[in-house]
Image 1 (cartoon, rainbow, N blue to C red):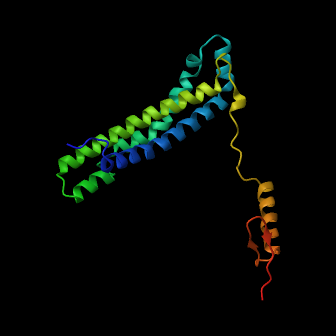
Image 2: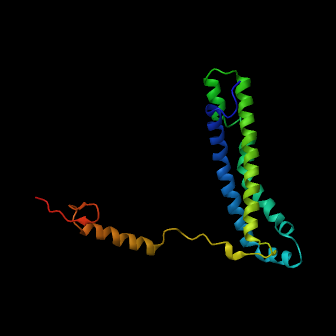
Image 3: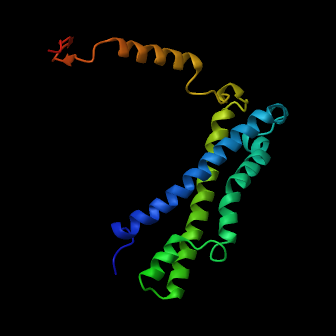
Length: 185
């Protein structure tokens, strides 16, 4: 019997798990930050009345985790009926018995749900740890609005640089330390 960490088994399974966990963690983090920014006055009131971080943010955390896990749970509920997943099809095409293919697929799906749940709990916990500090104060300044990475100003500067490149001759060459102009003959 080969160990479970044999590359031909380990790499595809970890790839499937990480692919599903990444989307769940991203959704959990986004939902958590969204809930914190929307419900900041409620959180501040709870913290002001002496609630701990966990007590104050528990309803927001539960809702964030629930919303993040909704797609995974929905996918789990239709597996095999509407959605015939890749592992099962691959095993069937390879000649494995149907029962083995179904068992493999169920185990993989339960692993996906478990890892997604664990990842979303960790993501929401880390998010709340950053937003509510050790002194039980809400740090809403750490939640930034979704600003675009590329603004009009950045695009204008990039356009100027590109136009500037077009004005220079395309017959230059790089030497070890500087750029020299070379004429075409």
